[in-house]
Length: 83
Image (cartoon, rainbow, N blue to C red; front, top):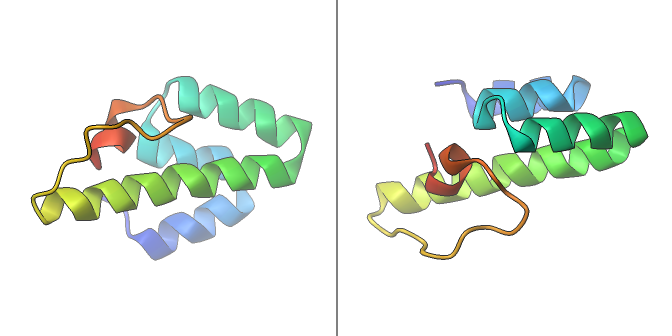
């Protein structure tokens, strides 16, 4: 997959692209595009939240721990399961 550092750099300049690389094309991407158009800062906050949840769940999955509760505001199953 894509390195976390490269993903953060991409997200700084284009938040929807960062969300697309992690969550794919779906509700999370649509929400991020809308938030970015409404204001650049809300788009960043949402994008970094999606990436935080993704890498947090990915780390938990590598340790053998699976969170049963879905993260609030995240609609991508890829993000919910950590890939």
